[in-house]
Image (cartoon, rainbow, N blue to C red; front, side):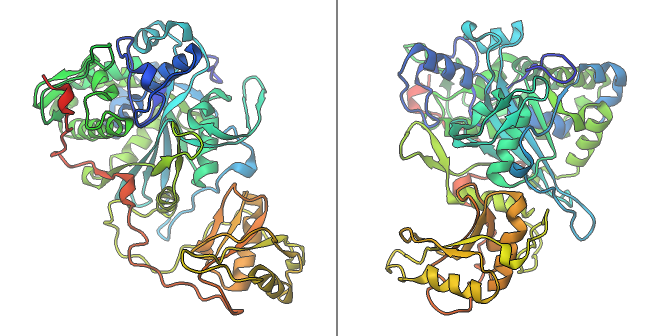
Length: 547
């Protein structure tokens, strides 16, 4: 990928799984995030090898911006020249999330997408990534982490998206070539990077989560090695001797003794890419190991007195600026320094690492899709609710969503009404869509139409809209019927404003909002939350890989 500066971006992938070198023989089996068997033709195998190679990068990238405030000013102009930049969002306006609004104190949350690409665009990255036949090929965003910093800077949340997630990728336009890439349904999330650059990955996240992203950062293989060396090592723990190696050549080659070891350089890469040997030998275990590494690295950067040494800081700053590509809003050391200062305000004990909740896809069991828990996790981030559950008690009223447009006249609002009153124990209420459509017409929304398709199931009545330009119309429908604004959701599953009359409104003309549950704002257990200050974290070793 070539940035606006005309310099080819040296970036790799960043996600919840990691593997890299040619010796990492798990490529043929790494087609599924949970360790499913591969197969297929040689082309498919090459793609799998490309995807695996970068999954360590995101964690390290986040660490750089968490721990190196101050390093940037060592030699300003030289470091500025190292930085490569690209456009932030390559999607159409209708697919973008509304900008994050300030809270009552005038503070605004920050959302930064950390991306890792498997690009083999340099000799060093080719050596680390292997797969020589993929040199300078289309990169994949194999590692993706959304870093959310709360408006008051008291906490930080990180959400990793599994590399094999099937999602909708929006239309993207390459700013350098003008080439347009059409929207794609049920595509692998990592393919977004090859559609014009990191800005398409940003657009994909915004379309999926409705969370506005302020910045992106990407990092490459060689940068991880140099930064780990500059820091002086990162402590990691295993509960038994581990050797990630099989008789058929699979594994990262990581070999550690039981207990805590400070790792750096090639050994750090091996840790971050290890799948065979940790827990159940899946990408979930690899993601957990990556999160442990990231948390440990943050603690090391913040506590290690050796990093007050100007020479060590210089080496770390040099490695970081050479390794990363950023959006135009972070294209100088001054801007990155300001961001690092904001990030350093967050206490380590208030950093929470999570993985997007997911399940196997019905039609492609080697891939995963987001679950309802993922929607909840995205809402918590969107509403700036701490994932560690330590927020001060907030008002019970749902926050008003930011509206980017105004509604048309009531009679011009087109809304489809669908019967979703079916429940696990009750049949749907016949004619319910028509009844509520009549209610809307009586209130002046004469464009309401009843959906005659088969009834579905929604526990709670919800209004969905596909794009920002219809948000105000959807909110108007909600206001007319007395439906809370928190039940108005952006969704690409609908083509227009659609009211799903749920199991909580099976009769009557007045909607009664359900009582808010006490645990509504708790982080789903399926997100596998991990606290940044937990020094007791230790990877469980699969007994088949001990020595």
